[in-house]
Image (tube, rainbow, N blue to C red):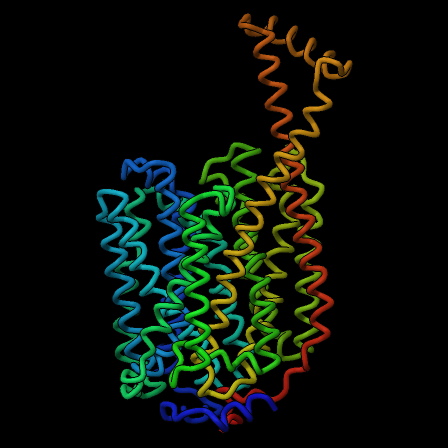
Length: 534
């Protein structure tokens, strides 16, 4: 088996974690729940500002070009920390790393609330994302280390629910908070829970011991390469679609730095005595496939969390509060499906469960290819329910397939890589979605405009009717008003058609991947955390 051969030739690690017994102490359960809550805060904060960027922009007197950096800075910093956390956790121990991450995240949240200009906010958000990113993989590693396989049906849905629910409800929660109080409370709300999580982590976590000797082998060049590679890739994917990709100087420079960083990073990964990220986990076929599926789930998770609000805002003219209320259904569906998916994961083939989830996803996005400008809450209800239920049906088996067969000494690095694939999937997905929306919008507008010209009898009849209508109702320059209205209708239809194209592509992606589940090996007895990995 792949995992056995890897462990045989690996350099000395931190002392291996003891096999988890069939019972688990109350202390560890409380420690784990505190960790899960910390992860929830860290993931929620990616999206919590997305519905309230206009309020933050006004409060900080920022330009429309600067304000997206409130989100981008957090994402770039977090994506660097997530894979790094595996090494740090082995060196410092889960207890020290998680406590520092929770305390640092809380302090950065408080600082973000005090920001008086956009530059301060971007720095504080980057610190918040970087330090907070250390909490996410630690939870996944702990779940498969301290809990016996018999408890997986409860633990896996819990972390799956948090990882998917937090970004989904982020815009809703953010919209409510900024409407009810002010944008400062988007960050202040983290302070008290953050202090409690940090305290609980320091007092209760006892899963492993530090191995400070690893500090002497810390690969600084590898870290520099990884930061340049992942950070610049996140920037290129965020900014590329709106700036004509490499035609923009900043995007071009970042693409060059990303390439150099990637070469340095991969060179160090394969030559350093203690690489900053251990890629050998990918030689476990189930981990490799699980990470691939996690990447695609990232596209679905972050892509649809982005697409629905853009549709409702651009086509329906909803504000952040109305968008949050309309999209609450997905979160509710996830919440209700989590316990069901936990029960199913112990009773049916995980590959079949994942296939059902992916086909459910494809059905929901296919439903959205019949979009019209009149679609509202009730028309979006079934696609959202399908999205929420399918997300949980996919997430639980993907976690178990990817991490459930790894030995404990590989889990910390592997969970960082696994979580990174989901975030990178989201980044790549958003970049592709934005690019398709922009390109297809221009294409459809050009095609539609060909039919709305002076030579078209139907267009002239429509224009005359609209002109008469404006003359009777407003008395303004009726012809100009009618032409403006007609142009707006063409733009709206072009936007709608581009949304339908994106949903069609997502349908093909999820439908195709549903068939790929057959290639995964049937997961055997779990090695991580269950005592079979030593």
